[in-house]
Image (tube, rainbow, N blue to C red):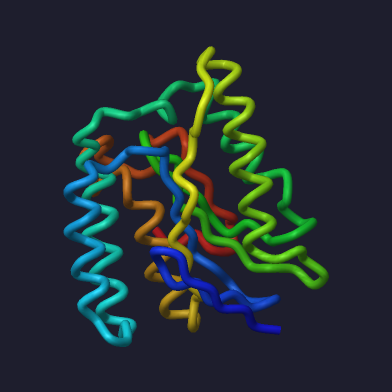
Amino acid sequence: MKTFHRRNLPHLHYNDGQYFLTYRLANSIPQIALQELQQEFNAYKKLTSIQQKRLFTKYDSLLDSNELGLNYLTIPSIAEIVKATLEFPNNKEYKLICYCIMPNHVHVVFELLDGNKGISKIMQSVKRISAREANIVLRRSGQFWQDESFDRLVRDERELFNIVKYVLMNPVKAGLVDDWKKWNNTYCHPNYLVL
């Protein structure tokens, strides 16, 4: 079964397949930069794969620049909460391929398992539980994660290879470490290790 819905981003979800998702802290990108990206997105009548990749690269660069300085995910206890919520559905809803927890966003790649409850519900659970626990630790209240996530169906093995490499190398690209293995908040299943 296939579902399609659109908020600010288009979402095409199947009951199976491999997916690449990125979600971020609430208010982690300056509003003016988001508006410019939204205008560029709206200018396309139908988004091609190349255009989608280009827009995502701009989006991810905005996150990596971390202009607003939101970096809750660098706090070890918060990163552990996020790891636990990503790992809990592993082998229940999905097979976890890799993830990287950056200072203000998370990249995750997984393969949906038979009988899963769907990407939207899986991510609602992951984000709701981690937000509740993180807010307790931080002694704060309010929105923790941005409502919407970026998601992409992985089309083939070559694309999967490139995405896994991209996820693992994100801390290096952002200038946080010189070797991806030095970033404590990265995981890759041994069958998918590409570096």
